[in-house]
Image (cartoon, rainbow, N blue to C red; front, side, top):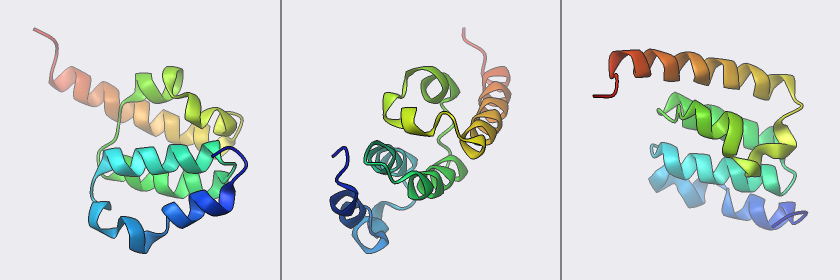
Length: 98
């Protein structure tokens, strides 16, 4: 996928993933594929939708999600991570481990 932006864009066309657009995990995977292929702006757009749909796994995005490495120097990615961390901490405090 790396460097094959056109192929990834075809996969990520809204008409192709319309049935899954409410699924935060599918959107997260799509954003990762777009980021890995070098489609940073498109990846950010899809990742914003994933977060809006409930994908708030901050530890994963901040420390483990290698597909997003190409976005790590971007201010908009840092801002999104701040939002995701805030949401994650809110959920973590509402549902502490037993």
